[in-house]
Length: 367
Picture 1: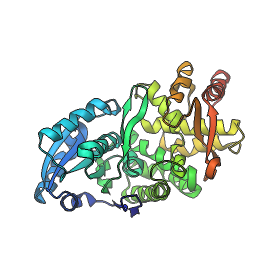
Picture 2: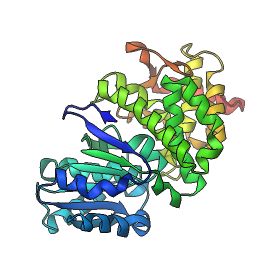
Picture 3: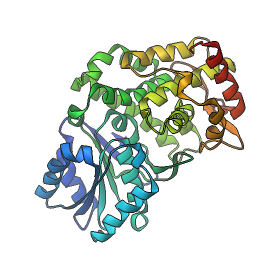
């Protein structure tokens, strides 16, 4: 499929074995036939040798740049270290970056590509469900800051993305589950039938059944492509994809990134749906239904202990979508339906979010 972008659009190929196309693609987009294969140490141990071999067989000279895994490595320091490696390796503007890994690798490698010599092409090879469902498509790249997630970055659409479910064979069940939070989000926003199918197929999806995984990945990419194609630079309709992420990012920051992204977004979606109910935007029972769709994937639901309430307002104000202390939350009206235009978002004072959430905590009620 093709994702529209200001650069003319880029292709996303989904299927077992599509990684074998990597040398051909790099040869087409990198005139010097050189690339930087950016990955993390864990992924490199599983797949680095194979990908390096595929590139070499296709006549591509490859510099491998690897870093320690984990969200804690998605920093300006890591960006600088990787950039230095490319410069020391003599890579020029005729080269490209190949991002092999999960969301952290995709964001960080994409940011290196966006800024290296004012921008070189990037090929995304996502190796986790989270990256396949979400991070590898859309063109957002960047790094975290102590104040919050993804506060430094750039829009840099990939030249192409190769989404190969074979990469998932090395992942455990909990890691597989993380990406399905984003898939369920797509259904909650725009396709209730898809959300229901995901919940019913959770067992086979978490077991890595290829046919179901390909179906889920393809549908999620289709939904996301339709949204980002209409709003590449996140100025309007694309904002709906932030559902669950405002509270979710606060959970990640508060935990020192010990809570995985999928769990944090799952908790954030339930919490934000409950805020919508409290404000009369969401149909009563929406938060409970959202939680029910996530439960089969064994994702952690909303838990007040995930947040330090005294720090929540300050964290929310630093969210990149916040404006003068007003937090922008997504106006999900019901599963499968989100408001249009200005109704797609709810402008809520940070202190009001804290008040509502503190009320759940003190009452012992769960959304």
